[in-house]
Amino acid sequence: MASVADQVPIAEGLFTWPSNDPRLLGSKCQSCGVVTFPAQSGCPACCGEATETIEMERRGKLWTWTIQGFLPNRPPYEGPETPETFQPFGVGYVELPGQVRVETRIKTEDLAKLRIGMNMDLVVEKYIERDGKDVIAYFFSPTDEI
Image (cartoon, rainbow, N blue to C red; front, side, top):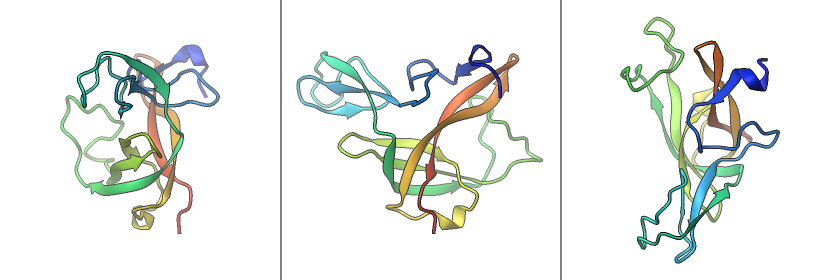
C-alpha cells in the first residue's frame, strides 16, 4: 500500500483524508436543517447562506440501484477499466439516516445479491493511479449480503 504522501483524494472536500475513520463531508443548513452532499455553501431548499460542513454517517441502507453495463464515456470518466477489461458494476443511492441519499459506486463481488434496504458501509480506498499517485475514492459496500 502506498504511503499517505503518495495518495490523493479523487476530489477535494468529498471526504476526510487522510483518516483512519474516513467520512463523507456534507453540509447542513443552519436555517432549515437540510443536509446536502457534497458540501455546499448555500442551501438548495431555502436559499440560506449559513451552512456548516458536517461529517456524514458511515452506514446507510441501499435505497435503489442499477447495473452499469457499459464503459462510461471518457472524458469525464477515468476509471481503471478498458474496453477489454470492463466488468459491469453496481451504481446506486445509499440513504444515510437523518441526512441524505448519496449516489455511489457499489463494491460487491456478486451484483445478484444486491437488495434494496440492505445495509451498506462506506469504503474509502484506491480507485486508480494518476501521475504516480494512488487516487482515493469513496464507495459503499454491502455489509449483510445474503
